[in-house]
Image (tube, rainbow, N blue to C red):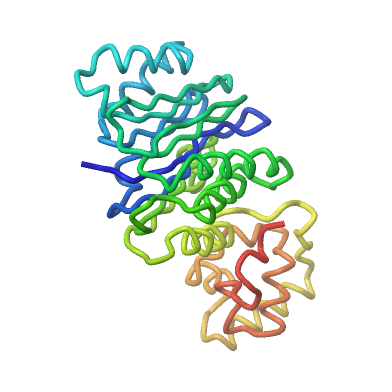
Length: 289
């Protein structure tokens, strides 16, 4: 029985991404609570979590139901509704949240345009309010993932759940955002058992951006003949037959194109080749800008 959970479900301001951030005193909360499909919506199911809510809610949304209608249908069909807590955001940014009367206190939530926030067994309503305030203040965050994480961390700092900390997760979807464009998973990160799961989630998000997100056009340097020759010499010094081989071996394919290279990767190669593959020459969070 999943208890002690707080979450935020949201759609990005541009209407292109949907996501869920969640933390709990529960092992591997990411395996239970969040679900999302690009162009459809996102859902978090918690308290005495009914994991069937994920597929059923997304099915309702895909058929054209609003978040509120989808929520009503879930509750109508569930005899355990009084013990459930759920947040839903639909394709248009409509939001709904529900806290059953039998959820352990403090339990509650709130909604706004494009966002649903909810939690149970919290230190108090200040947790939900802190998440809300951080979400509202985070409009300038570069991605939905960063905005969701900042809101989750604010709830954690405000007291989070009363029993402590154990796991956290972050799920964000966007059409074609998956690896090599093969699916809609932009971010799918889980901290299953950690004394500071929200902090560890931030570290993982930094790595996710480094390995799985292409740099913006402004950070792409042209690969001319001289630079290609320099990079081939570098690869040889690292005991690789070619720079392409080094890129593949170190999993930095998203940092190099046919005619460009990420400026930060090039800087790392020139300054400290041993850190070039991980981008860890800077403090955590330095990569997002």
